[in-house]
Picture 1 (cartoon, rainbow, N blue to C red):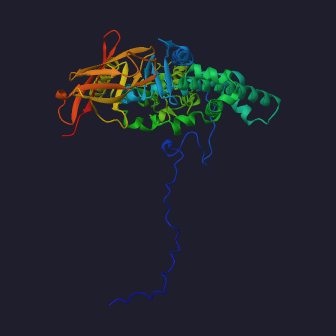
Picture 2: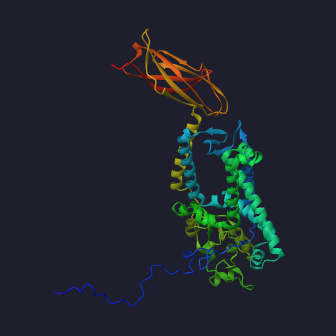
Picture 3: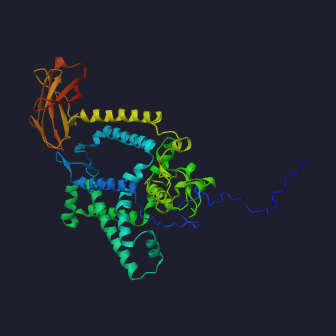
Length: 492
C-alpha cells in the first residue's frame, strides 16, 4: 500500500520555466499584428501619399456634395422645421421637416430597423463603400483635413522629413499653421453638430447672448471642438480601426459575392520587380505576374495595410490603392484592374457579379420595413391626446338622475401650426363640456391641458364602470383621434 507523503514535505521544484500562454508573433504575417503598431507596441504614424486618379476624382465630387449638404443642413427648413434636428434636451426631433416626439417611439424603432437593415444590405452588396466614400469622419479627414495637411506640409516624403527634423523655424511655422487651421475647422464642425442637436436658433442664442446665460451650451461647444480636433490631428485612422463597430462586424456580413476592393492574385502573382529589359511576355514565361511589387498601393493607403494580403478589417474601401495600381499598370503597359472593385467569386472563379438570394431576402425585409415606416408616418395623427380621471374626483349625482365625471385631458400638437380642437362624446349618449371652453386651441408643437365634464343619465350606465368613447375633432370637422376611457357610476 502506497503511503501518502508527509504534510510538511514539498514536491521537488521543476527547473524548467513555466509554459507561456502568449502566442509568439509572426511579424511577416499581417494577421498577427496591426499595420499601425511597431514591435514595441508603439503607434506607427502613417504618412499616406497623396492619392490621384479616376476613383479619387469621383470620390472628391461626391465628398463636395456631401459636405455641402452637411454644412447647409442646419440652415434648411421645411414648413418652418429643421431638415434634421435631434434635440435630446427638449426631446424634439425633426426629420425632413416633420417633428417627432418621444411618444413616437414606435416610429423611431421602425426607423432604426430600416437603418440597420439598409446597412446590412448595402454592406452585403458593396462591402465598406460607406466607410470610404460617405462616412462623415472619412470624408472630413481625407477630403478636407488631409488636403490641408498636404498643402501646408507637402506630400508624404516631405511630411516624414518634417516629422524627423528638429524643431526649427520652418517646422514651428508649418505645424502652427496646420494645427491652427485644424482647430478652426474643428470649431466649425463642432458647431455644425451642435446645430443638428439643439437647432440653429438655440445655437445662435448661445453665440449672441452673454456667456453666463449658456454655460452648458458653451461647455458642449468646447467639448465638441476638442473632440474633433483630437480625432483629426491625432487619432485619425485609429477611430476606424478601434472605435467604429462597423468594421468589426463586417466580417459577419461579407461573403464571397460581396463587392470589395480586391487584389487579383491570379493575375498579379508571382510578384517581382520589373526589369527594364523585360517585357510582359518574358515575365509571363518566367512565371511572374503583373504585380511589380512597387508597393504604391500601400503608400497611398490611409490605414497602412497591404491590400494584396486580402480583405482586412482596416480596409475602408477608399479605392486609393486602385488608382495607385492603375497608374503603375499604365506605366508598365499592362491592363488596369489588378486591384479593383470585385468579389471573391469573380476573382477566384471568374463568375460575374450577381444579385444573390441573401441580398434578395435583405431587400425584401428592407422594402417591408420602409413600407411600414411610411404607413406609420402617413397615418400618424396630428395630435396625441391623453384623458384621465381628475385626481381625487368622485362621481356626482344630480336630482334629475344624472351622473357627472370630471376628467383631465392633455393634448399634444405634433405639427408646426396651432390647432383648435373640439371634444365630442360619441358613445354612450350624453353631454361633454370643456371647462375651459370649446374649442381648445393647442399651440404649435406644444402641450395643452383642460378638464372635460361628462354627464350621463343613469339609464346609460352599465354597472360601476361604463366604457366611454370620445372623438377629438379639428374645427374643420376632421376627426383627429378617438379616445376610449371609463365612466364611473354608483357601486351596486
